[in-house]
Length: 168
Length: 292
Image (cartoon, rainbow over all chains, first blue to last red; front, side, top):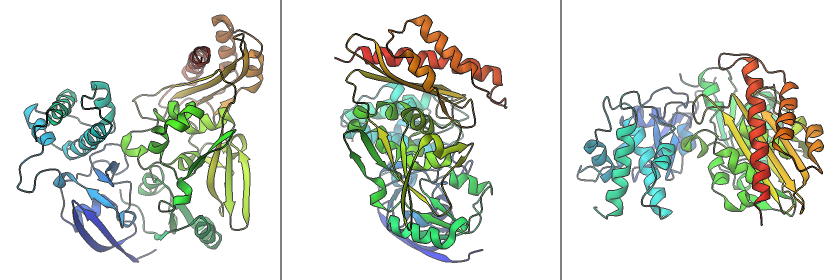
């Protein structure tokens, strides 16, 4: 079996990060173990729970189902990339606090990334007031075992309203 | 769990893929979206020595329109086709089915060809390919051959793809009849899961409102999705009413021999097949009837 290391260079949260990895290393393991970006959580490791959701070239994906070597030359945004440079929370993150959209917090990084990607897309498609059905569809690939989802849906709707009002 | 060790090749062209397949054969697997392959690796159900990554080959992501078919490159993302209005206008069943395939995160990676090659008996895209009689173009180092979905899908998780072949693109027939309607539905435990049973139908009506052409099928209730061409022909020339559709759906369901498993019993699957077929036939006819 192979011990070959493959070069990988990825723009992570706006910064170019490089290294050498075995082909079997998943993107989420590389982010957490090599780059120490432990905000992205690992849940099921087989593409069911959504805890490891990151953005690849602006689209939400499961980082347990892509090998780090495959991200070479691409752009990744993790939950660490959502807040402002000075540490202030983004509108979406602040809305999660406002509506109590997290309890244990395990699913939260994946929820935030899925929701942010959805809001970015909604804005692009000139849909500043997404419906509850659209919001639920957007986070349907993310499991939460605490909240019952309602507060998360509320948070995303609140963030959409704040973004539409140009609060930032 | 983590994947076992393997060697990785990022292919730059379809020719390079064929070259690598010719070299490694059964020791290599093609890595498309990875939404099924990577979990199977994590569970150690597969241990290929080589993965050939086809994600960076633009030619495999092309979508083009011919008079009688939409050609979709096998590496095209499911999300791309779901969002493509021009594809939806010509082959509406694709968008109708893709709305049931996984979630945003999996559709952003998962590919059209990957789903067909995976050949899960419940897969939505396999059912659409079967109902529309899609043609699959398979390439080796020495050339291509074309195979209909009906023979390409030969068993649960089994296709006629040879170890040195890559699925290059898929031709989805466009029905030229002006008044064409289609419908897709399924029952699953949770939205985005594989279907327990899925049904799809496409119907064309003539100017008098009689059925001119029809095709319908069921997934999840047999080793591969099945279509019912003889029953579909019996609709032609008729103005199908509720009773006729119920009878046809019932007859189709009775011909199935589904398995029982932890998700559903055989009897429940057969029942679902009848109910869902009736619904998609009704909806497809209704949709065809509203075309101006």
